[in-house]
Image (cartoon, rainbow, N blue to C red; front, side, top):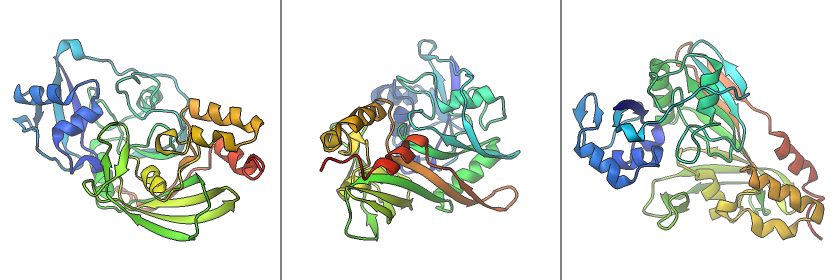
Length: 321
């Protein structure tokens, strides 16, 4: 059997371990994960666990994979932009359309494959399925993502996320023109009961808070800064849908093809191509935190991708009269 290690992320510490594992190893059903737990193939600190246990951020769960379920994590020569790097961590400006780590349907071409290709030290041992990855961004979202070079820094950064001591700023281009200049959405989010890849505002979900501020009004579109105070999956996308301000190109949350006919003909093809490439107009533009090793106040910024800048520049000229 092959052993892999799963490090619990801040957003996962309130969830049952069988659910966390099935979401990360989504080629396995929840029932199979539970069966593996019963057979002591999944352990913590060498001890048997229960399917409904919850673990703190930074905890390492060991998983023994049956031979037929083994997979190989390969280094790949994929260019990525490094926004910041030192001996302890690096910050990647992830392109939209790139998955963060291998999973069902995306066994190669991920950010992890690219990081392994850089031949730099990463937290976790050689069997870790997400080496270095402290937090995640959606496939469609571009921007800044922190990568740890050793286990101590990984745990320290995970704690900063868990304690909400990392300030995150996003930029979104949305459909609509809000009446407000600033607003805060505090609405719980839960996984959709019919489509497990989607999330909805739901009183049965986890508490979620996002502050929004209008940056620029562009007629039928608006450029908005988003400041998530919690780190739920799809949080900004779900909260903007809740405000009836879906993100430009976001088919999952009502910002996609239904708006295509609103664009002039030359722009419609570009819009469809953007969605086919798994890109939306959401960018993680700034991270502010205290470096866990040097105690230096860090502020790291990432410019908008070219395709995002293109739509902003053309926004007032592409809409049908």
